[in-house]
Amino acid sequence: MASPTDLRTSEALQVLRRVFGYDTFRGFQQDVIDHVVAGGDALVLMPTGGGKSLCYQIPALVRPGVGVVVSPLIALMQDQVDALTALGVRAGFLNSTLDLDARRRVEAAFLAGDLDLLYLAPEALGSRATVQLLDRGKIGLFAIDEAHCVSQWGHDFRPDYLALSMLHERWPDVPRIALTATATSATRTEIATRLDLTGARHFVASFDRPNIQYRIVPKREPRKQLLSLLRDEHPGDAGIVYCLSRASVEKTAEFLTANGIPALPYHAGLDAGTRATHQQRFLREDGLVMVATIAFGMGIDKPDVRFVAHLDLPKSVEGYYQETGRAGRDGLPSTAWLAYGLQDVVQQRKLIETSDGDLAHRRGLARHLDAMLALCETVRCRRAQLLEYFGDSPTGDCGNCDTCLNPPETWDGTIAAQKLLSAVFRLDRERNQRFGAGHSIDILLGRKTEKVTQFGHDSLTVFGIGGELGEAEWRAVVRQLLAEGLLAVEGDYGTLALTDASAEVLGRRRTVMMRREPERPASTRTGRSKAAAAVVELPAAAAPVFERLRAWRAATAKEQGVPAYVIFHDATLRQIATDAPTSLAELSRVSGVGENKLAKYGEQILGVLADAPA
Ligand code: ADP
Ligand code: ZN
Image 1 (cartoon, helix red, strand yellow):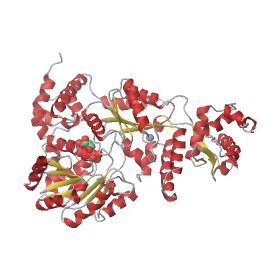
Image 2: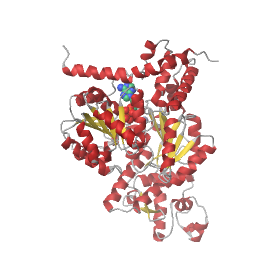
Image 3: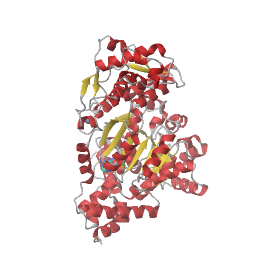
Image 4: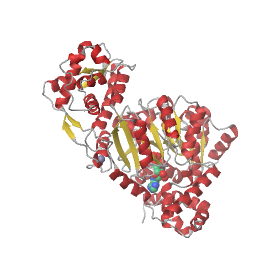
């Protein structure tokens, strides 16, 4: 005989199949769902794209009462509700964008028990009217999305999130589930403490995103490098390009557009209306590139972002992983690409040195940057290093990052390091001057530039002793020394300076192994063809069918004013094109086709399939 848990499990599984059209749970989804359905509190850590939403949506459908979801992303609530409505789930939201009529309708539906899910902004719970409304209805669970917002490294929403500890005091019998994609163990502890979730069960998924290919390349002409990446590997794909400054966001977006790649800028300097329009277009249209500062991206759950490119060095591994994680939520092959150069290191070090805040704060920033630099300069598997950083234990090399695909050569750079450090040492007496890395390299290469002659540096003993390496190689030497703390950057002008550890190299007590700078940008063709094959994986005959389905989807999405993925995901359309079902029963077996979508679109899809190409 089935135990009560089995019965509930099977109810959850039925909902997964009937409503969402998926066959099986992923990872520990089922464990979380069982736990919350049974009334337990949970803290869920899963990488972006891991499938967090189902962890609270299914319990909300199974448990009596309404699932109340707290989310800071007001601009995305409409899309979330649209996506649920398309599945036949009764969902609504309350936030400041609603007019009075719409608000009344949602409130009435909530009180009448006609909602499965209600989305709220965290600040709503600070309003007495909302709390009283919730008191009058029946709540099945609280879900706290983007739970890292309570952390001090979190976001602007922090005060509202901190107030969420009141949920437990006010509604002690309602289970709570907090979810986040960003958390080192310190953040996790902070979330549990601040949200009064220390008694909750913790579910921590592996942070691996195997479908994302990580690549970090030396920066030469970043925009051109970006353009060839997009042209060669991602034509027609949607993606995000991150830049550090607003100005470079604008320039890069113009550059891509001028080169035939549709791109939109997004940064905090644009007015709210423009930002909202650009975000909406990115979500709704196929194949747009968003060029943005890190102001863009939180909560963007567009599943088919095929690449995330960084034109500047992120400040921390946490930031890098969060940003790159926006690629490939649908599980299909995607690229995370970062171009990084000496100037990035100098600039970031300078920013830290001149930043406000006390010494402890600056040390914190420097530690984060060091971890990021170590990732850039590593000769190991990038993924293994990333996963270790987040406390995972990777099993061997991944085979899907640049170092695995094109193992870099290393060379003994001790002598080069000594030459460079000696040059810096000689210049140290004139440290009030603006001698950046370029000047030291000029001296080593024996170049009589204006500055070199002006200061008489052509008479230094180190002048011209570095002819065995080229300019790019010397820059790589400086970068790696900076990354390893064997060299420092000082002052407003980014003057190079020795560190305590420099002495070990100069005194020959330490060897320095370096990553060889490739002559040409590393070719990742092997990886690319592998990835491309996995994406396309469409029999020749199915490709035109897939295109017809996409056209149908675009028209349908436009008509309804919703993003295309709300109708069906790419992966689902691909499967339909490949299986070519000829009946509704066959169509219903495709992953991602639930009851509601079958009823709504089934006949249309069969029609598109039956249409012989003109
Ligand atoms: P997260 O919120 O963790 O970033 P989502 O909840 O948006 O991730 O899920 C990512 C994608 O995976 C979505 O497209 C979702 O429909 C899909 N998905 C989630 N769970 C399953 C499952 N059990 N089977 C198939 N697809 C799933
Ligand atoms: Zn690897």
